[in-house]
Structures are given as structure tokens and as C-alpha cells.
Length: 337
Image 1 (tube, rainbow, N blue to C red):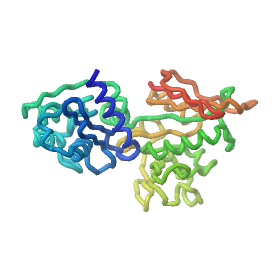
Image 2 (image 1 turned 30 degrees about the vertical axis):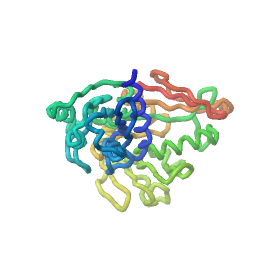
Image 3 (image 1 turned 45 degrees about the vertical axis):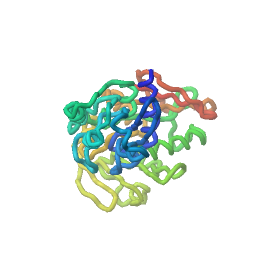
Image 4 (image 1 turned 180 degrees about the vertical axis):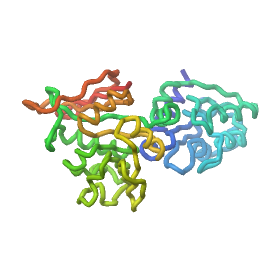
């Protein structure tokens, strides 16, 4: 129970890096001496110091490290990336024991960090709150294990099960604010051509923070070219999936695809290092991913106020309900596959 308590604290710390460290994983670290936490840290910024580095830096008396236990939610890295290997750092400080939440399945780590620690004679324990630690980085693990981005479908529907059409807004202000929070946290948002041309969305997080996602559109025939659209304003990174060209102009990256099949789309996104994507398209696009069995998570806003007489029926799917949140006049249900 004590080990789970400290690992839970690692998870809490790791979440402070949400939306700031992608495509790296969120990681938290706690250093304990005689049942007292003497150091804490988390990975706070992509390209910045890792959790273990920040935790060790926070320890005032470094002479206690050889007598301490380090708890970390993810296996310490063993390779030189933007920072030196964390496994080497723990070895250099001769920490007594390392307790790890889950193994890092990224090919450059994948047990190598654990092997280094054990070879140095350290006591290593693995698998404390393992599933919770994996759930923390569902997108990261999906990208490296399934060789594709983590895919989230999001839509709003009326109390009687219809989706909006012709720019009718279903959700209230609380739901809209949460959506903008997601845009500051998730790596990318994707829409289809119809949504692009009909709604001219900005797909930014203007109501929450200044960190915007990568915007992606499936514009197979480049119908957007020459149009006065927010997607072409060069205010944030933008990807246009199309059948004509591979080209980068300012912040816009044109990526050529052979067809509009979901598997083709996710393959293209994988190759440009998109680890997670929220699909905010229309019914046809959403259902194409459902039918292709390429969905990891559903986020569905249901209005308790608005009803339509007719229109497009919301998609049907099978998944496990994980969380329900009441947002004023809307109910958000989150489902995991």
C-alpha cells in the first residue's frame, strides 16, 4: 500500500505535464527517504529535463540519495535523446532502490533502462499501479505498439440523438470551454472537407490558452486552395491531406495520400509523428473510423435541452463507459475501447 501511495503521487505529478510534453510521455517521479518524500519532479516541457532529473535536483541533501528509493511512473530512459539517459543519472547517484510503474515499450528503451539499473546492482521493482501508469500515456503506448496515432472521436448530439447541421450549435458554453481546453492538451485535431468549407473553423484554443493543436484536414481534391479560410492563415501548424502534392509552405504542410480510407489516413499521420488526434468531423468521417475499428476513445456531449425534429442521427458504437461529467445543460460521456 505504501508503494501504491507513492506511485499515485507520481501519476499526479505526471499529469502536470499534460499538453506540454507530447510526443514524449508524461512522467512523474518521487524520491523517498525513511517514509518521507525528499524530492519530487515531473517532465514539464518537451525537450526539457525529465522527471528523474527534476526530482533529484529538488533534493536538498544529495547525500541521502544512496539511502533513498526512487519511484517513477515510467521506466527511466536509457538512450541519448534531447537529454542524457535518466538510468545513468540514477546509477551515478547510487540510489538504493528504484520502483517503476510500467515498462517503456518505445524501442529505444523497452527494458534497456531496467537492465542498466540491475546491472549496476540496484534493487528494481516493476509493475506498481501498472495499468494506471499505462493509462496515463495511452496515446504514447498506442503510437509505439500499434504503429498509429491514438484516435479520439468527438461529437455533440441532441437529447433525441441527432447531430448538428448547417452550423447549428448543440452544446452550451461549458462544453465549448472544455473543448478548447482539450485543444490545448491534445496534439492534433482533424476534420473533413465539408466541415472545412461549411464551417470555416479556426480549430484553436482561443478560449482557454495560447497553445494550439496541429490542425489537420482531409482535403483530397484541394478545394480549399485560393479560399479565404482560417486553416490557411498560417497562425498555427496545419496539415492538409490531399492527393496532389507533398509540400510545406510556411506553417502549412501538404501531405499526399492515395485515398481517403481511415487506415491510409492514420498511416500518413504516423509518418509525420502525430501521436494523438481528435476527429471532429461530420457523421460520414466519424462512422468511417468506427467501421474501420480504428477508434480508441469516444467523447460524446449530449444536450439535455436541445432536440431536433429531423436531421442526421448520431453514430452508433460499442465501447465501455469510463466517465460521465455534467456540464450545465450538457452531459459528457467518455468511452474507451
